[in-house]
Image (cartoon, rainbow, N blue to C red):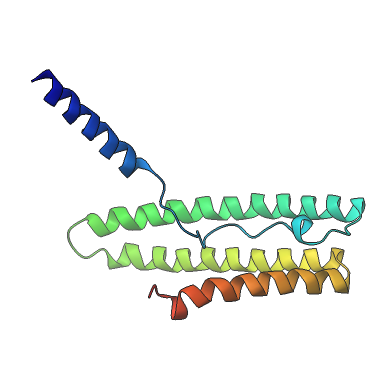
Length: 147
C-alpha cells in the first residue's frame, strides 16, 4: 500500500514538473538585438549616445505603457458591468488609440535619433539584420496567423 502511495506521489510530482516547463521552440517575441551586438565598429562616443537614446526612449515608452495599462484596466472594468456604458467606454477607446499612436511615434523618433549617430554603412547593416529577422518571423506565420 505504501508503495502505491509513493508511486502516485512521484507520478503527480513528475506531472506537475512537466507542466511547469517553459514551452520549447522559437520565441518570435524576442527583443531586437541591440545595435552594439550587430555593428562591431562603433566608437565609444557612438556607444554612449546609443545607450543614452535607448534609456531615454525606454523611460518615455514605459510611462506611456503604464498609462495604457490604466486605460485598459478601466475599459475591462466598465465592460464587466451591466448596462450601456458607451458614453464612458468610447472616450477610453479613443484614449487607448492615442496612447498607442504615441508609442509608435516614440519608436520612430528613437530610430531617427539612432540614425543620426550611425554612419550610412552602419545603418545599412542594422536595417539588413532587422529586415532578415522580420522576414524570418513572418515566414513562419504568414499574414499574421499561425498555420
